[in-house]
Amino acid sequence: MESLGNALVLLADPATLAAIVAGIVFGMIVGAMPGLGSVLAITIALPFTFGMDKVPSIALVLAIYCASVYGGSLSAILINTPGTPQSAATVLDGFPMTRQGKADLALGWATMASLIGGLFSAAVLIVAAPQLARFALRFGAIETFALIGMALTCIAGVSRGSMFKGLLAGVLGLFLATVGTDPMTGSVRFDFGIFELSGGFKLIPVVVGLFAFAEVFSRIAERRTELHDVTAAVGFKLAPLAEWLARWKTIVRSAVIGTFIGVLPGTGAATASFIAYSEAKRVGRFRERLGTGEPEGVVASETANNAVTGGALVPTLALGIPGDPVTAVMMSALIIQGIQPGVRLFVDNPDVMNAAFMALIVCNLLMFAVGALAAPIITRVLRMPESILLAMVLVLSVVGSYGVSGRMFDVMVSVVFGIVGYLFRICNVPTAPVVIGMVLGPIFEESLRQGLILTDGDFLAFFGPEHPIAMVLLVITVLIVVIPIWRHLRARSSGPSAQAGR
Picture (cartoon, rainbow, N blue to C red):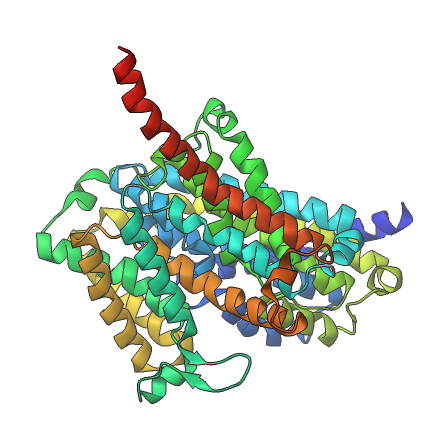
């Protein structure tokens, strides 16, 4: 209790509260700017922590982390451009809601879902960090391969109605993920003699092209103005409680998925959001409406990607193992303050850690408040004349693509994939599978090859009793694929017999 009281005193320090508010505002702005993201936001703020005390500096970094993940949903919902890769799945239903004149509701769903996901993962972090960290160590290359293999089945989920085209788009995404340097051997693959391709395709330029540029090209080509005409709803609006209760299973499922994926090093929030979206597409109450502006899609994505924030801190704090570039930068902020993450962190710095945990909760609560208050200002962008709005989208897209690595080549990649995305729309090819393939492809390939090295090239050993977690995940994957096929064949076979019976 004494440690908890000391933590409350540290948290109530005006410097700590000011750091949280500043971090939330800054993180939301950077997160909403396509191509910038959490790593850049924290990196920019890192020098400011040098002269700060321990708790305010940690609170600042945590606030930026949470708010930047949420900020990506703002541009995803309003202008069809995910500010961060974590919000790529939010586009699938968030922007269609805006097109239907429900921008205020879409922001309400995303903001509340972000709050729920963040609080859930924070609670898990506080209660079960050491235990979850030990469990995460049991996930090796083979277990990760099985998990990502199960996640790839979501390509089929988002391709209903055009399964063949969706699978082809998914294969294209997987191929794009192989371009560049081989992670195992260091050799360059599929660069076609173009030096810039030796580093591979960056996710943000491709996503910006497929969604933002394609949307602009489509509107210019068809001379449509529906967005300006229908988006009269400005502000922030929460759906009735009954609507939330109707989707409570998706909320809980996505929070668990996001926290669990966050605990696993090397996966990330983009992976979590697509896995959660896949599960909503597979077993959600409103699964048939996903992709058409169904709030369940926004809830699944935003709950999961914000739940990753607390989960990702589990291996970082408890084991000293950063799971992704974001937590690696956050870990450096702790080390700068003389705090060494690892097994003795909670023993050596109990007051600071308890204050950090409470700061994470406060960050999520204030993020909701700031998001709700800023929504009327943010959504007024939709009242602009369409010509100005499209020009602004193009400018943000170009800046975001260029900002990834400071290369004009990435801007050209965005333009090319904008044309590809526009052609996909004409041919009714879903674009989401391309992004899913790019997000999951590198982890899938690397874990597969590492697993084959561990088993001396014996793929069947993946199913062996030495890897029970992988075996269970692979069995679930087979069932996910086989059961819908079996049901379809059964329905086809029973159809003629039922008619003959009549």
